[in-house]
Length: 444
Image (cartoon, rainbow, N blue to C red; front, side, top):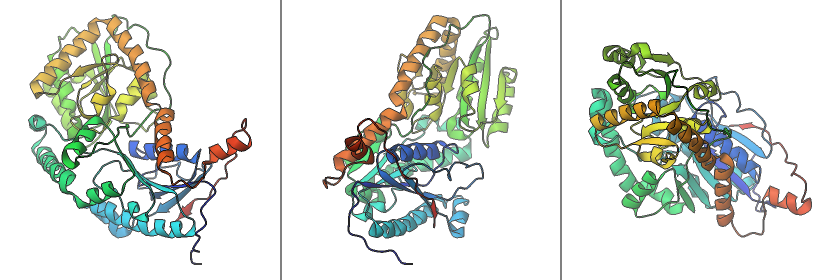
């Protein structure tokens, strides 16, 4: 049966979200899409178009969420082959977005949307095509403009250094001259930068200033700081992330190797990736292997016990839009010892972190070692930073971030006199929660 044209607008705004990844547990990108969609669905009749899962561990995609219709656009076999090729990911991603546009146009003709929001991936390179729908378009928060600092390429293996050098150059060109990015920027009614470094990059490259909002957030936050650490036990250091070149775990390994042998500490590396064996051998050469416990990176939600164990989170990433581990640490009341650049700079303050300037590799290693000694010897400082971590985490609660995005929607929605589901329900029954219909899942 063909789609019927329908020129009658809904009695309240209909929101279309586009998110390649959509799952509560699979990855940071999939979680942020999941949360943003569920938050929007609390207020608006919401449809999200997402991709078919690549892994069997995605279990929540089929969960029914009140007010939300999930439409899956599966990757073609050709796209799947491209994704698994060294240089094919972005081509496959763009082809997928083109097919998303064709479906979005059909859905829009059948029952018009009031606004479309390109949510994820958060990287700026591929904004999709749904800005062509001719309705208000929101993009972001976007990131991906951050580069590995040139002086730190020497810390990577030759293959990774060449790859990151190429990425740095590509960023310089694509950010300034990429037509796909430029067209989406011109069409957008609102674009959010995921951090101040992204904001500055777009200001320099395109002459526009974007508002900032971190692309990810928090649900559960501890309400109390940690008790003082007993000096009778070792300082517990947690490092969490993918064991890949740009995460730069060796900076921490070299810092630990500089510490006095009689300084009691335990390092827990929570991660998985292609460089695990290489970095294990490096720890052996540095003489610190006996101080490290290597644990595979668990799924989201299964990491709480590791943050509960830790006294401090060490953050060494040479490029990251934000760093999910930073927020997870703050939510658990764990202070941070981290590189003070890119998205981490927006998260860390002197009240919750020991911030390490990013100037040269030698300086970073020395400063990290000094920071660990300071935290090991000053339990009051550690407790004060723990209290500051809990306070700082509240700034990134999903309720707060979602309220900011919903306020953006309200500002740019067409002036049709339509109101959101929650507004309409409040006007009808001020003391009651709105009853939302559950929409079916659709696969195309």
